[in-house]
Image (cartoon, rainbow, N blue to C red; front, side, top):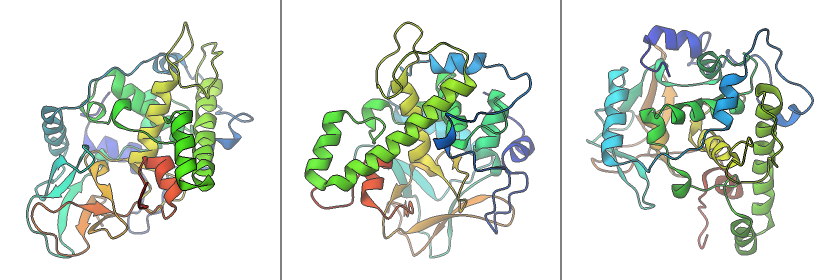
Amino acid sequence: MGFEHDSAFGQDCMFGGLDFNKLDVADITSSSDEESDSEETGPQASGYDPTRVDELLQFQDELPCATEDDFDELFAWVQRQGADLKGIRYDRDNHCGRTLYASRKVSEGGLLATLPRSLRFGQAYACRELDLPLDTPDLSALTLLVLSLCKDEHIYARCLPRKSEFTNALLMTKQEQFEWEDRMGSEYADAFRAMQSRGKSCGLYIRDYLSSVSVHSDIDAIEPMVNNEFDTATLYWAMSMVKSRSHAFGSKRGFWLTPIFDLVNHSPAPNARLEGDSSGYLVMKALRDIQSNEEITIDYQVKDDPMLVATYGFSLKAGA
């Protein structure tokens, strides 16, 4: 992957026409991010070669869980791209994952960290990197980008949680889904089905319109690759990474992957927020005074607890 490219190129790829003051996304030109129509319509592209997508569909993620050295390397890589991370550090959270903590005291309104435009990976960037049709839906394009990064063992991909470390509606077993429904109510099953329907539509779109391989697997099945069937477990894992780690920044249609900032945990009473500044940088700003070594949290803007579980795999309700 060409992630060491000139930052101006990254800006042109991802954010040409994006006004961060208004948060008006201009590189998504249609409502094609809704894959629910994917079985009827597909991208129109002249000379598109699906070979690369074929390879990604048959890729199986076998990367080990990230180490402290991996996260140190991730922070170093992001800083080389122009990020300012002096106000934050990573460490384990109460759930054994990594999250962000303040490395110093920051007053209300102060900056914790900044990311340049070139470190926000959106639909347009993914399409250019992978030579996809430019109208490829966001979830499909970014899912394939995650697979490509894993295949290349890029440091960002190496620091993503592996299947053994993460679950949501796309990765749960039937038994796990039944247990959630039995314990918490039918609205959780409804949220799981909605997320799974979106995942199935995305998988069908990639299979039917972006690949050339003859695939006969059940897209609903979470099973290893057999013969020339693609590895749906890895595919759904990549979708889960996009759904759980991307931010919309005010857009109703587009969303972007943001290294480092995607480590921050959710809270209904957050102490920080993400916003764009006048120069196009993404900034993490304190909503109140934050003490050194205090965990940083933002609001994921998901008010529905069943959808929190379906997307991120955790619940805020007592006894969950």
